[in-house]
Amino acid sequence: MDHFSSKDMALSAQKKILSRMATKSSVQMFIDETTSEILDELYRVSKGYSGNKSEAQKVIKDLVKIAVKIGLLFRNNRFSTEELGIATDFKKKLHQGAMTAISFYEVDFTFDNGVMSELLTSCRDLLLKLVNTHLTPKSHNRINHVFNHYSDPELLTKLYDPSGTFRPNLTKICKGLDKLMEDGTI
View 1 (cartoon, helix red, strand yellow):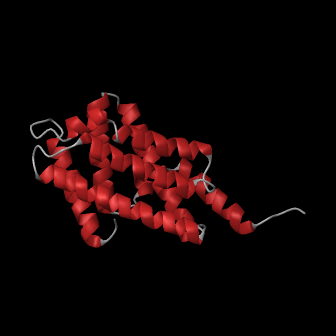
View 2: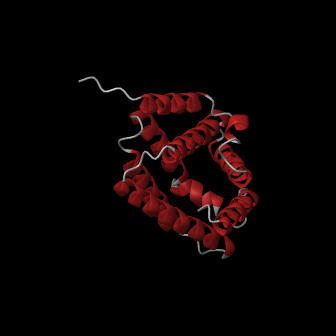
View 3: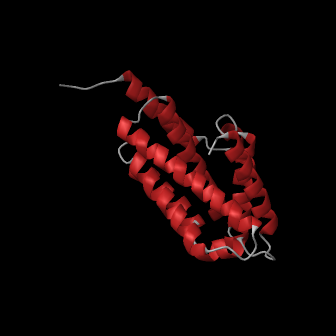
């Protein structure tokens, strides 16, 4: 028997359209101002660390595509009860990561790249588990790309260097994370 669902087709079309239009102006329809500012700072850190503008843009574009697609899946009630449990675990781990990031920022010389790297890796694994049956392998690769990039111990060490060049970026990132936590976003 042929299985056809206009709802599935519409969702697929939305995901395809969104993946093609992940530009700054279109993203602001889906991502709030604080998150946008954090993404801008993450871009600057990536660009400064890698010295490669196109690589930094690709990481942020991948991050945005994934965030928008997952938001779309949530809005269309595509996650099972079990997957919603995984999403809750992911949100808790993300919240823990944000609190840890802010704590490492506020107290100089407490940064432990192993701890931060492990938190990011755990977030990545939960996210991959959440979207396993919903997104394509290409999207899974995007998740890996983003999380592998930002969990790089060398990048994290440079980011958290109290006298390093990324300190102003880290300040803005942590202020943004703090605001998102206060708002209950993460």
